[in-house]
Length: 344
Image 1 (cartoon, rainbow, N blue to C red):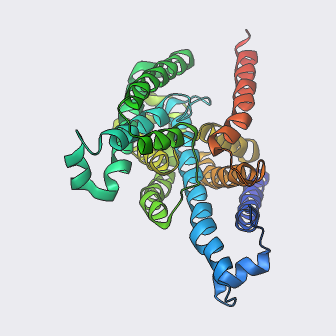
Image 2: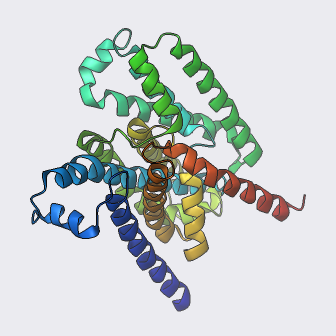
């Protein structure tokens, strides 16, 4: 037991160092390279270089912080969904939660000036993230109802339901393209592939507050999720209010995913890859998996953004393509592992 706790602490320290290194790399690398001393000088105010201040404070710093926030939100949402569904293949992107949140955001983008004008005028800056949150909640609830029967979640049903929801949202998004203006069409491309290129301090604040709420609240359900791994009946006998726990976890998961999608578009596989990497380091205890998954997700998204900026510089790849190139093979490997365990 002591050895396990020590390994978990080492994993936490290692992820903290990796996050610091990744954030520093993202602030210094790009079409315009800066060294770490220039970045530190700008952040501390000891360098009076207007161009460096523009690059660091107005372009890179909000982008780096937004990437870390989005990665943390998607990863802790994925870890929570895997615990809630008691299935290691649950992921906001695979089961359609991200696409449901994205569709709600696209509806606001395309119809915000016409049918949803009152919604836009009433909610203002929060119209887009609130719509994405509601879309995420709806899809998460549907997936849970479809895939869970008598306390057991069937992986095939869950994945097939995700395929169906992704197809439905894709079809509706295609219809909306015929009504979209040129500006809205560019936004639709942004949502479909995911990007941090347009990050601003407003986006950081808009996504940071709700994702921070989710990241702070979900770890309080770690013991309940640990008990939930043994089944709903066992959790109930251990004194947990299973129904309320599921409702709150679903709401917080949708809050994190919806807020992330609202500012970055659909970035897949973060919620799948990050929790699995953390479990390899710490084991299945959600008291460690949830907070460390948030850190791992931040590292993955920020690092992927660096790759997206440098791979075809000075142009940029959508960050969703970079994550898909890593997450796709990772998901196939997990499927093969699950097949081996089931004996097929």
